Length: 392
Ligand SMILES: Cc1ncc(COP(=O)(O)O)c(C=O)c1O
Image (cartoon, rainbow, N blue to C red):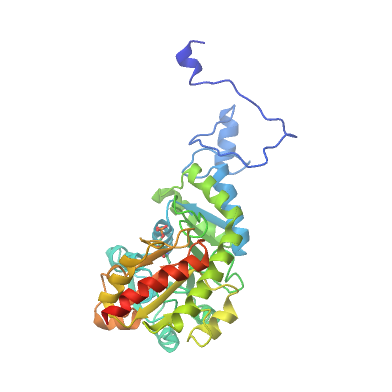
């Protein structure tokens, strides 16, 4: 074998079947082969287990899918390259021209844009309501056939809580599918509700370290069987190395999530009595509008704390720029704390009326709480709040 051949066919190093690696290896390969055409064809027909091409599957991706499905309490999962990819591919897979979907003002901006821009191009219509308008949801479902309801809980950025029991009951009654973007709540919560598809941005709590991007759709086996061919065709495939990092992130998921929630709770309580703060939005806060529903539905309330500054947009800008330990950046759920000032929160596609329903006030600030020491975070918040208060 010449050297140029050798480097393309390196020596095999078989690992004995009784000598497993403790950490699962990354299968960083696009292609898999069998010895014969017949076995290849049998595998492609699904008559035997096996892998063929990364866009369809890969053992590292599959391991992540199986783990996520179990965490969410469902039979199966399909992963892809980003949270938005999971939302887009699910919507494109489940809808066709003439369908109607129900969505909400208090929903992640790109989800609303996908419905308004992309689905509209293919003749899918929508109705947009407030997630708190249960009678509106019932009225719309009763008045026209609706393919699916897509929603979030807690919502981004002001942590409204969707009534999951009521929404799933209404959807069942009227034959609509329920698609819940469960990113804020995490992959371990809300499994007790009759949700058809859970969507996740794995970029957030699952990866947990802010260095890798991914998305997932989780549901029963039939539902994922419906989605998977479209996910494969639409092509937003997760890289095996990213899947490996997600799997690694999951090992510390519960420790991180609980610690971040405990700090978020402390910070929400601190903010709720601070003179510079008009209103704090955190589901774990006793007396918060969403608290009773959140306690019935969740065991932890997430790492996002939002609040309205009395000093408005100017105060929000000053506060965010004064913080030392909070990076002024998008995303949430990672180990480092982040801040989004009001100027970075307003949705680009909404008018004043929609903005009011969204709960985003001129002085709304969103924090994502990381794993820094809670006393350091509180000290940093205090000095930045003082600066914002001096403005008013
Ligand atoms: C609720 C929610 N869903 C989906 C996404 C999109 O995820 P990704 O950034 O992985 O595409 C985000 C991102 O911020 C989000 O907050």
